Image (cartoon, rainbow, N blue to C red):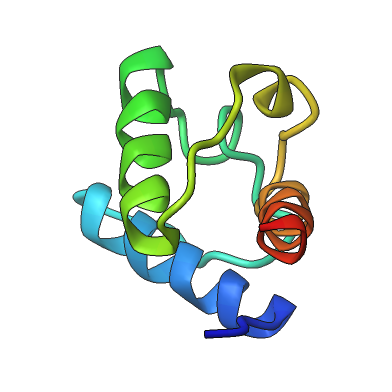
Length: 83
């Protein structure tokens, strides 16, 4: 199934809402570390949930370029198009 950028962003919002006990208002510019306070374990849980949802493996070097939800969605979109 082809997933467009907006669908990817909505899916990320849903995963983050489930992960966080008290999720703030999320938008594309939400910083995963600063705004959400994710530690390394939480980031790995997020990556695992995203990998399961989108049925792909996310290389760790991709995460170096991810700060915001928009960054993550863009990387996912690229990976899904290459799949």
